[in-house]
Length: 257
Image (cartoon, rainbow, N blue to C red):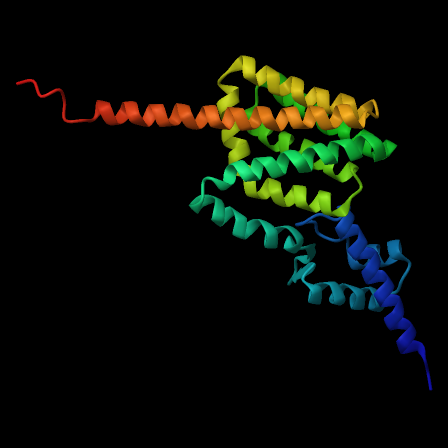
């Protein structure tokens, strides 16, 4: 009996594994649209029927989604399933914010240390590019762009650590705390001295990784998150004082006739 079908299935499994690896390592990111079928089949060196079978395997796993007339896209399953419940929990339990920052400090310091040790030339090129973009947002005083560049900077470091879990956990964590990142940067932006401190901290992390200094990179990352934590506390206290002052302003008065 012909044995072509089992061979095709095994090849489809191999192609699916290759695409899954690209998703895990971050070469294919959530939201990315896969190249046209013809182009991707040529890139992988397989037939289009074989590619279709491989894609269907990843669709069934929830890693890819197909849209009628819109191609095939990478889903956010690896990140959203972690991030979504935590976003809700943080709204209801403010005390979790401190735990979140403690976890972020551990994760980012380890990521920076590993990046300093493991980053390839290609990783360093990406890191240089994203750091240059971040620097440009400081020079242009562009707060909105700074928020996006800040998140991208930390994600590139996580990916340069060459640990799949660190890469995806960092992406998930940034989804959870995006609102806090935006609020914190807005608070810092209104205080030029602290804004410059933040800039210097990013430079220190970037430089330590570039110099292949794991201990220095880890310490720079720890100091950065501690600075963020302190700033969030200060921001919350300032908001508490502002609300208290507003309540006094709108109170019943001093009782004078």
